[in-house]
Length: 543
Ligand code: AMP
Image (cartoon, rainbow, N blue to C red; front, top):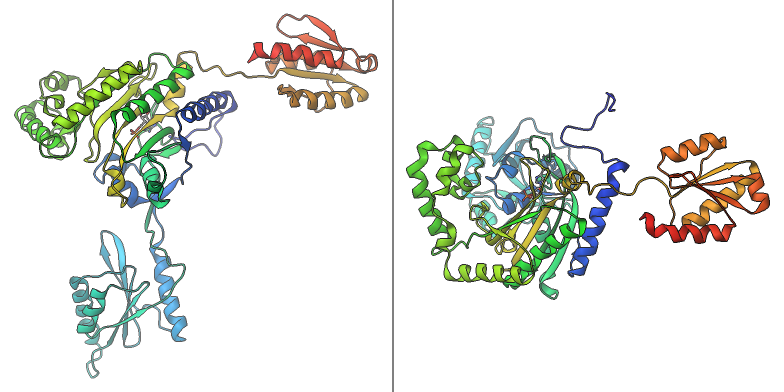
């Protein structure tokens, strides 16, 4: 089917064609409807944000952040050029553009640029704060620079800032004989590294803070849908541009009923879609206090050390970096070993234990079936208590369609007020795959009515009939050029039409239209009002 053409969609991305988008739309409309009934409002978020937002929220050492993000530098050089030009403009002099340029790096970001001019050193800063070491660096550079003018006094040193520097910097500069100049550059932007979003929870929390949503009646219940981007190795059910439908509840309460209601909402959504064989796993991973998860992790680590030699390389590494993640392992030979490891349920603090028990009671109250899975963990500190995952059928190894959990510390970590949070993300691509595999994928295709017209008078009537039928909500195909009836009926069939409306000049003159049911070839005659009536009576059967 697919033709080799010059340009192709990038590996890991794909086009969704009308044969599939019917189902995608049904899934998304069902999400709008179901989430709406639970009092959730839709939030639409930008597709890219500052890299740092994701790094903070997801964790710099995770695979997602360390190797899977699509990131780029929002050109630091624009800022340098702006500064230099603004300086030249202000002083109305052709400051000799960098005979040499030195860039001091801090975590790979050019923090400041030093330019040599005519017996002047100009140091441009992109940040408000610099430390003693930076000043010493510059002083040292000034000495080297000054050696080229042995007869003169040491060259002038000017620090140019794009924003008012801190008091500390002013004092530091004053005591070192360094001048400071602040340039007012209105378009000065501090964004440095930007990334396409690999997930949306970080953005939702950013928006919650940015729009002061803590002032709204709590909790704030938001949902989103849209593409996410991760540079993963593509395979079935795993793409580089994939789609998530997710929701978050943010506010002051961590009542177990909130956890249970969020889970109930996902299960209701899956149920409404007719997804069969969805299985819900839940767990509690406690919280980050000495008498709870950290004590368990210590114990787990000690036990893992004892069996280290029997584990694979990944797990061995994780004993050091993130022992909980060893529990995620899918390696066959590690399973028996993992089964003997201590379990977090036996190490939860009293509060977390009570919370977990209450969540389970609440789920039972709502008739939500679940399985406890002590190996279901999250690797980040701010994830706590409830975690859950839903798997679906027909997906092979990538069978997780939804992951979620509680993350009470995240909003605060991103600079907001202390806020409780819980949410989930559904992999829409996988959900659709699973629906297709189980035969729930067939979305209504084709047309309700194909208008086979012949003759000029008939055409005018056909145009009007098409308009009326479409207004009444029918899917109508009106061929743009005249076709012989035989040919027209053939096309109607190919398009999967239910009825063909036959309009020749005779029919129009008589005011009696012929409707052919394509499935059995039967024909009936109608006046125009009767036809509409008849189609309406059949419509409910077709959808
Ligand atoms: P996560 O944000 O990693 O917790 O993922 C939540 C859900 O998104 C998973 O359960 C998957 O269904 C889906 N998902 C994650 N990564 C991908 C991907 N690369 N391609 C398709 N679906 C994905």
